[in-house]
Figure 1 (tube, each protein chain N blue to C red):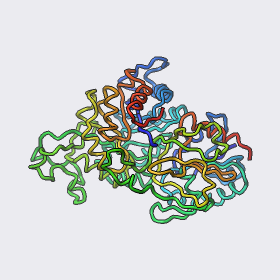
Figure 2: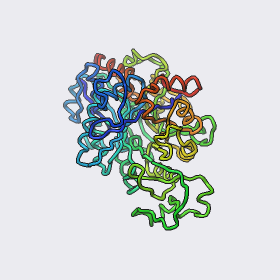
Figure 3: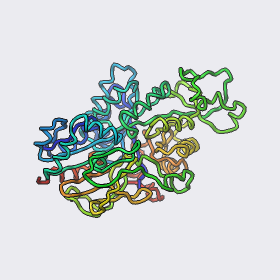
Figure 4: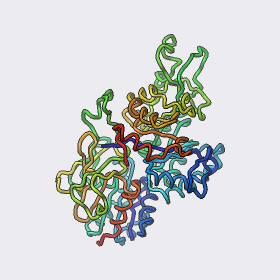
Length: 285
Length: 212
């Protein structure tokens, strides 16, 4: 039976893990490679690096981190952040990444996902979606996208759907640039579009829940998980092990991504898996 | 020396590093002479079946793979490297494979993959993540692997050999599919040993120890 995956996520900036990780026995708690090794030993199912380095000139640094990690750790590694061109993907895969996660570039140029999945295979193209609950609509809002007038994308826009009913039905809007820019795009429709374009997996982050430690946005997770036939990784909001359990059972996620609860040793990966196993969720122990 | 065939598909570095970690020298190469002179040969690969076959042809490596297998030296296929050995695949229409193992490569389908609202589970494609193997015949490379161990999978298609006696392991995903085959000097797995932590590395270690 396929097990549910637990995926720790590390934010990396300039080759160093930011926000810190408080494991004991680490020679260098800021070194992504050291932390990757620790998670490997704890039995994490995959690992995700999110490169939040601002400048494109510093991309060589993340490649070096990936290279050094791939020499030490024999588990699937996803790298996201700042991917703009096909060569960015190629370089990451050559360095030893198994998957790449793409967010802003997918929204600006959906065809990029098509090209990337044709070139490298869907299995290594993860589309990251940052979604926020729609609270009110702005009638003057114009989608800030070059392809916004293309009829094939019209169905994606919240602005073009029934504005009157927009607030009566729970909806989520896609954000880019690390959650700063609203795109006017419906997150569930966007996930389906990305599947159609060849994405192999969706990494779904709730902007409302991220950092709140009150659990995933289960309705969002479930809405996307039921809308697509590719795996969905739930992200944003985990504060305890019950939240992970709910993400799988109520949110119907295929994998759970979490950062701080593992980084600060509130729980180990093994504890999380034992908790899930006791409650009937298939996990790899 | 182990030759890992480079035909422009996938993350070959992990396979090489995995062998090195287990103390086996391995090179990533697309050079026919190097591959033919190696003591063992690995055919990895991720991506789409037709692209992989096209690249193998363009790199002039179809005959090299065939010759390596005919020579009787240990041969390891990983993921697409398993699928390519088969007669044909239904990925993007019908594509011809190497036809070394008779059979087809087909997509996961059936009721378990269609019932999205199922309260129990809705099976996603690709089959991605850790799943267990059930050992039918213990190939030499599986020597240290306990039955029902978990390995890392990522694929949308699976192999269906005509001759069921080549099956080494099966895995359940909606039904039991063939997750590895063992025939003479060939061991080929749908899962990724190089991504499956210690047990995966044990497969690379035992493969590297085999005598041609």
